[in-house]
Length: 322
Image (cartoon, rainbow, N blue to C red; front, side, top):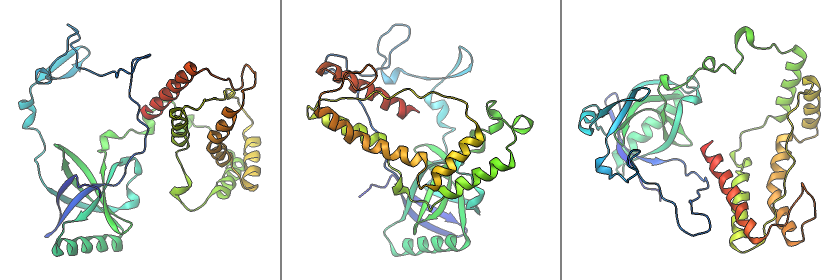
């Protein structure tokens, strides 16, 4: 049973709804620890003075804000305390808006709201949920959690109320801020025939949204690799040929994509399928001697197996930071 991370109430008009906040997601990312090579010694991060190289105690650390390159304004915790948002246990609804009016780029983290364990709380919760479902509206308010104020959107979701913390308007960039995105007169114009064919490809690949269709194949493959390595199995990693980026005829590419889609398999689907089976085929290869080839699979000695693990670890770290 998940544990509530916040409790308070939703206030709209004269109605007060006592609620508790629960996380709506549990990330499944891979996490690796760092070790000194050749040993089992963990590598730790410490707060070290740039000037002396010695570790600095937490209570001796103050904050500084860079006003210009190399120039900082130092502040004490007490000086910032008066600006902390008022610790309130109420989400005051300021507006109701249409869900379609909010672009997903504004959403950050999502939580579930549950009523407090009382008859009155459950009744008020059900009232707000039903009214919002009927009106197809989203409630906008402010939530203070962990000494930080968030803009929040409360919306019906699968028979419950969900609240998503949101980014403020000045935190969201415009495509016009990115020079690499062609806009206005600099944007190339697509030919009518190309647009029509691209639309046909989209139609042929369209289906109802089913999140269970999409798996984290990278995570599955890495976990399978780690399980085999922990069991002492020999790991053989096939080197894939480096993809060459090339300019192709757009119309020809559209025609080929449409033909592939009509046959019932897009490149994306087939790629996902092949990557899912890669780990099992790798296991089969590891049971037989690797063929001699400069670019194909190599039979790695036990020591090289650990370097392979480090490459996988590095790959996982890069994916996570991305």
